[in-house]
Length: 68
Image (cartoon, rainbow, N blue to C red):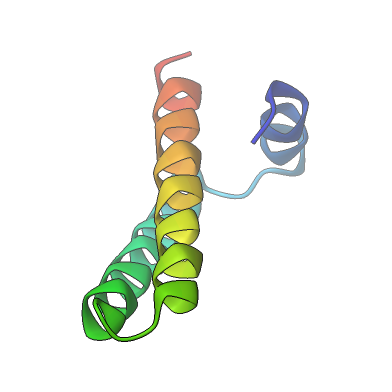
């Protein structure tokens, strides 16, 4: 998420804790998918890994936004 996107979220007013819970849920589901396909389907592994990376990045951005 870019800084501009986070500013738009704060202007629109959704509770960041709700968004963070959703991001954590996405991370957990992607982790379960990654583990389930580990060693079986390399393409799916890479897809789940990419989702894990992006969910982690979004979580970190939300943490930064909460600190501000």
